[in-house]
Image (cartoon, rainbow, N blue to C red; front, side):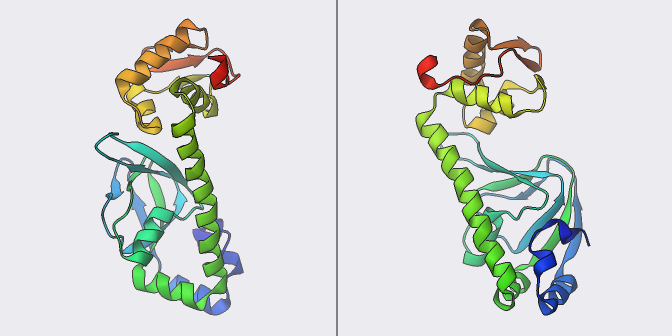
Length: 213
């Protein structure tokens, strides 16, 4: 069972593990599929074992803002909060790669949380970790200039030459394509990047502070 990628599974009580194995269903979903929309009430929990899922929110002021990327071995708190509270999800979820995992229905996962102290403890831990991520995102949006945020985002990518559109960066950082393009041009003029068609080349790996721009 590939769920062993989740840290709580190997520590589950025998009764809870047997219950879990009886209730989960294996799923395969292609990339670019919407798993649920902002406002939907989730009816099951997904445990991702392969691939990545983007959680993003939309509003009148911002077209899309990425909250976080869900990766293999992680449980989504947006999904979880909606299911347990029976309220609309605060964000939409979209597969950005082909994904694989398991789903468990709402009644079963609620029972698991009641019969298993291990799983209950895991639920508290994922909220703590994800809230720290979201707090950093809010801090970045409120206090950091967009040029700094773009450079930090570029620096987190694996290669110095990144295949990405300005629109995609805007979605990731909660800005528009036009504004991102303008800021990238300014960064190119300052010697931090070189803009190519569909690519961005990083010339400096040193992220500067707001005061230095």
